Length: 343
Length: 249
Ligand SMILES: Nc1ncnc2c1ncn2[C@@H]1O[C@H](COP(=O)(O)OP(=O)(O)OP(=O)(O)O)[C@@H](O)[C@H]1O
Ligand SMILES: [Mg+2]
Image 1 (cartoon, protein in one colour):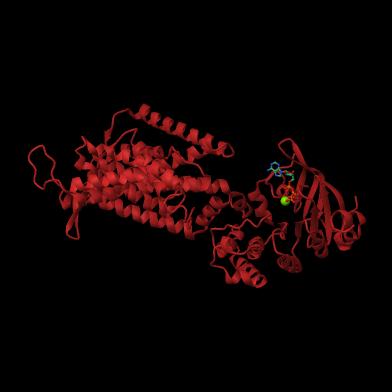
Image 2 (cartoon, chains in turn brown, red):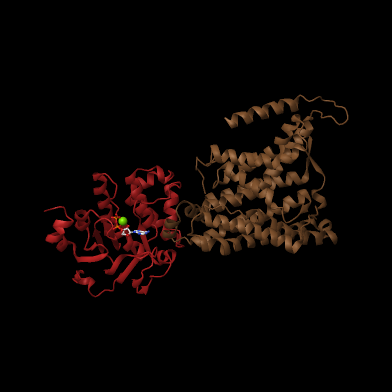
């Protein structure tokens, strides 16, 4: 019922948006051109690409522990923040423009290293001791850990956002099939696709991946196979950390800033993506992230016709709305109920 | 207590031994002063009614639960207190109650997981071949999701998976449970086959007649205590057994 109402609302808004006058006087809204729509779509895809990498972290851990690691957004933020100090240095001494390849490798290595470390520490310190506790307990602990990490970052690095340098080679755009696409966006999309494909192969076809799926399906019987369940769990957190580290660098470079809150909004959006796709499923997380990214970008644009002041601030509201509706009507997510390649 | 070992087993050392084992769940004692010994190459069955502690005995051996006193000795070393993973790596495997396959994985993957800890590729391949020879049905279904097999087929995969570990001792928890009568016969035939391969098998059963007809020895457990321990032949002839477990009056 509510859902139908919303659909009607969006359709009406979209019609209004699409029928805005093509030419408008000063201070009036005009219809978006095809180019503008394309840039919304590309923006949505590149945001979705980053969200996918974060969403996989939620999904992998949920698949194995049936627990939402609410501190995962901070795993992402911590890696990005640590790499900021290196990137800033490289930018100051021009290393970033003189040897961008080496500089990028170092920046990524630092981000990945710190994200993995934070993820593993979270597991060791916060979750492992609670593995047999009622499910609400680690959930609350996760939220506590998230606040702790945010405030630690704030305490050490200050509350203000800092400018994250973007290497020259990612500045500007490439011409792809007759239209221009920002380099950073294309890089984000390609990197994300490659990483998701590698992960999908890893989990479905390697021995370690098989052991991860075994633990996810039945931890007691996994032990009976001689699988070291603790090690599999640590590996899972570490993989989530690697993906979050890469995502952190790309995100910070795209928006050219970093602060202690950087992990929060992408964290929620990625969590929504994981739930939408079907939490526990790799392809689900990727699909969910794609959809959430597009919705966050296109959703506000479709509502422009309503003349809402600062409509583009609505992206988080839209994200939450999606989350609520998925939880209400399809808690298993889009691919979750099929459970085909559930982790 | 009567120790009904086979004559030539007398001089050998047990491969698996429980010594005065007590196991609790919380404050509730489930196993009390349990003594058992399994010798290499033997097939021993553990009989008992519902909730008598049969599964708990196997869980104690495998380290899923730690005995509150007493010890489990495997291959001359105390294993109680060690993790399940460690105990399995030393050579104990189990066909669990209700099969417990990885239902979302293929039969092939289930078998591969059985051999998870093994690095001897050639020997693994041999065992795989042996499993496929022993259970032709399994070979026909390698690419099928294990959860979509029938109960009987799943039981064979569960046995195949356990054999893939090439265990020194193979534990089975009620392999005939929940199967149609013809399948029960089939399962016992298979256990006989496994046994003829020279495996050491310790099988928990409610189906006392069937179990004793293929075992060398048996233990009978009642509310956590071993009340009888004897050769299978003697147990089959024992009047108390006939009354309580063999369904005759
Ligand atoms: N995890 C547990 N926590 C508490 N009590 C348990 C647990 N597992 C088993 N028990 C109790 O221990 C007793 C023995 O259980 P066990 O599973 O060993 O019996 P069993 O002989 O295998 O029975 P069945 O033939 O029904 O499988 C039962 O009273 C059972 O309720
Ligand atoms: Mg039982």
